[in-house]
Image (tube, rainbow, N blue to C red; front, side):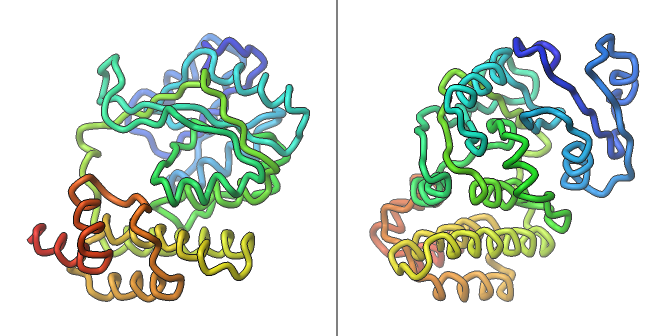
Length: 292
């Protein structure tokens, strides 16, 4: 962060139980813009709330310790927001994943964005087209970040999606800044997806909150409600389909919204082929049979 070309920054390091050299590095780092706050380990959302409460700047940049920003990322986005002269606009840019300490991007990426007005249209596009962003791809104005409220500390999965749904509700527009690049590190020991009951419950709670934000925005519109069901279809793709209680809860929500058309992107290429030929429900049943 201290290598950003935008020099007017404060770097708030919130340590919530690290077991590496984070604290020592923050305490001895030779830059007066860096401060350290230590809190009990109540999860990443609590840490972000502490940092947000302490931030004094005009813009808010979230970043986790294992992720990276291009040196000009913040400067490009600040300039785009200044040129817009809109205090409730927010900005985002492309991102690439990389593995451990490999110096080159690989795997997941998002590089072909566009601007949206109203801002909530970004959320509908992400549901329909199947793209997503890590939190550090965004730059928020202080007004929008504080209007959105705190991160929900009950959530352990998709907490960033839930928080950003509230940010998008409060923002006026989303500005695409193609030069503002971010990088998301994928640790080898974090590549597998957890399938626990708590994991599924958090995904459902986050989706319920995002759904409610989206329905408040569109009112009664059956076609757009069906797009929202992609939230829950993606949960089915990620959780243990042997947990019939969780699966039933998800399908109840999907049927309450209606299934989207076959163009909505969920899962990989093989699942997409199954879904196009068999429909959503049969495709998920076939996926479970293949998994077993």
